[in-house]
Image 1 (cartoon, rainbow, N blue to C red):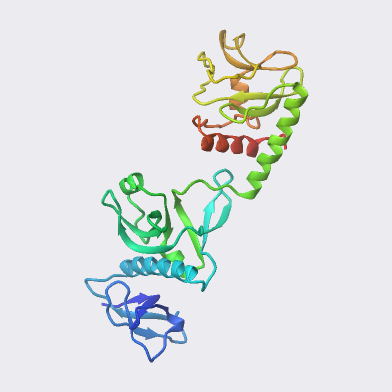
Image 2 (image 1 turned 135 degrees about the vertical axis):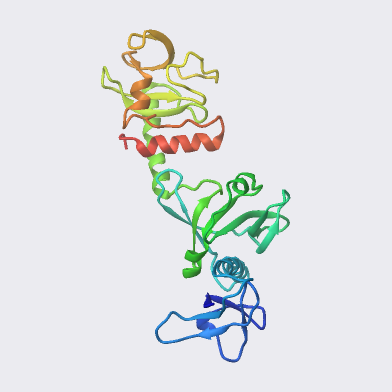
Length: 316
């Protein structure tokens, strides 16, 4: 029937043991089915534990169980002062570059296969002092179901069990349902963008909004001067619905457009008062609102939209 390869085993003392730390003086068992294991340390093949294939255990269940127990061990070693905080590698919400994050200190422990309030079982629960803070799902051949992902009542990430067991020092995320993360480069772009926008606003003697109205830097198509333009939640192209949030930037007006032959709420140049058409601002590469999917009236969406505007800007 062949053999099942086991990368980590449980010893007589219940400790998860990597193959290179195995000794002849101890017994080792499969993390999945508890079958006694054989130590394979030949000169040709990669070192591993093994047991015969059987109906109640498989390579997939071994990888799945081992990855969960290893995650628990890594968190335990960290909280006991044996190692540094485990590193999670996520994607920046804007540029998609890799961002390294340590697990936060508020994580106190990790528990395997915890039942949640809605009946789903999370592979590994990251525990605070009194409650579940987040979860980690382990993929081997099948990713988390769409139903479970949608109904999961806690923040969670999914990792590839095979990849994790090859390098347990790095927890590489393949599905991210934690709060969004931003790389330092994108943060710095936003800082520079806001600094420049503040200078323009000061020169124009206007207030720069810090919520609701997203702002962009552009050059007026007619007079070529540098100006600020604005967009807002629920805005649609050529909208006739007035943005109701006060104070409204003075350069947003209900004006008639010769291009589309109707009035709509539009940005106007602070200098020459010419219309800065929606098509120009939203559908041309390099313009401030190009490809922007405007979020809602909340702090997180505002920050994300401003990061996006700064990231694609040609003015920094």
